[in-house]
Image (cartoon, rainbow, N blue to C red; front, side, top):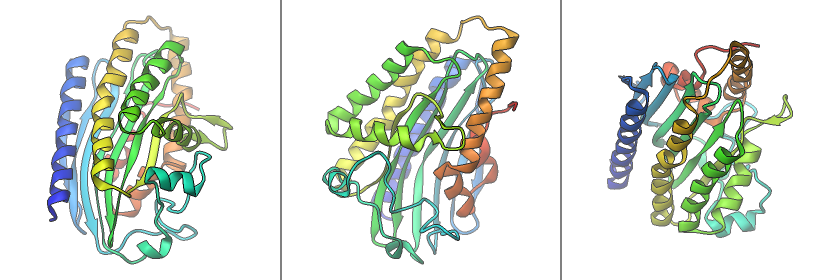
Length: 293
């Protein structure tokens, strides 16, 4: 294993541990950890919580490898390389270090991927669902970073949305003032549900293929992951005591249907995990425990 792979794995494991410890304290419950191995190479560890505050939540670590980067019929690759949403030109993206690999650069090449993925579904309809994924990938001679985080409230509050985005903007501006406008637009487009004609939530930031300067990209990746608790915990603390009715709960379960639809049909992480032989239980951790249509 390369020294950087080991560094990335160690960092993502530590990030997972910090997030799990803080959210367990917030909930008052305990995460159940379960390790898994991938026959083709690597594995990971699930950390799942079924608590009083979080009806279902998980924060998973993985590090997997294989001899051939996954592809699917009708796709250039399992993660849709070659497309970078968010209304930016290739020249603008290149200036930020965003350069999608070409399909021929990936086809048949060995790969390595490691990162942290989390989703938390609160019981209270007024506490928003949150998602984050931060990852590092190698394929052949190429390597890049990707990920982001977004907020999905059933009942949006303008002050919560502003506070969440403010933390992300400050994190982005620390590294490049051009990051936040670009990555927020990318999230707005990525988390759009075409068949519903609406966004999944109130956005956040999203990026992929960040690879021109590894040291610079890695510093940003680390800071973004560390910004998660600062962005999300104050919102949970502000809304967790809000009283709600049976009607509010019924609305929440119907609204969760859109979350499930997006993750099963469009989410890159879900598709990539399934196509690389990942742990199905860990992959579907993102789905809510109860949902209605």
